[in-house]
Length: 200
Ligand code: SAM
Image 1 (cartoon, rainbow, N blue to C red):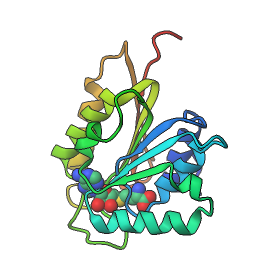
Image 2 (image 1 turned 180 degrees about the vertical axis):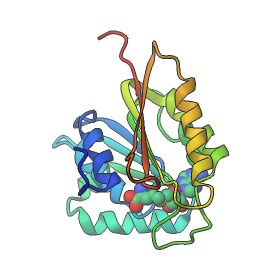
Image 3 (image 1 turned 60 degrees about the horizontal axis):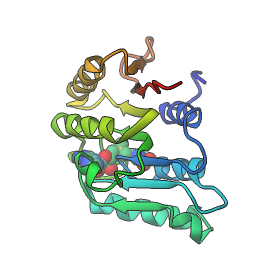
Image 4 (image 1 turned 90 degrees about the horizontal axis):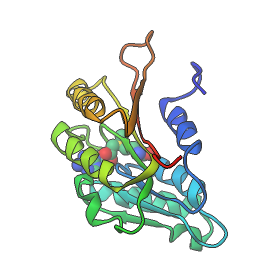
């Protein structure tokens, strides 16, 4: 799935599709304009009305944008109800995702809201707290996916925090990897953290 023509988000979606199944619980930790939320909804929604996407964003305007995008893109009311949106910091995801339904995927698309205020960006401290929370709510076999943009001020600091979290995970329980274009130095970096299913 890695070709020069694909956008980083499409590459991320292809990876998600290899892990996520109909009926799964997933988290969009940075809803923004709702593109990832919609992609996730399509992956989890099944005919029996199961599957859940818990979406969050620190900006009310992003939650409103995601909500209206989903209303436009999804004509099935029952499917729309599978998405639960919260205007909160993603470091609080444990207050949102019910403890009895571990998440199969927690997706982060860091940086600023496209078309929005570029000063309202994800920051290393809360990103780190959110990654810790994500690691606790993830199911065995599940994936934390982090798309990190490094072209804006602060982007590389955030990459350092994500990489240091990824490398601190014990290798017997986690597989951490990094996908990066080596001939495009400021292209986004995709970090994938797979919680091993120790019973398989
Ligand atoms: N996934 C989005 C999409 O498909 O349109 C794009 C996300 S955008 C690159 C990053 C988003 O992270 C912004 O909307 C921003 O408001 C949000 N954000 C920044 N800090 C946050 C935080 N602490 N908790 C949750 N969201 C945050």
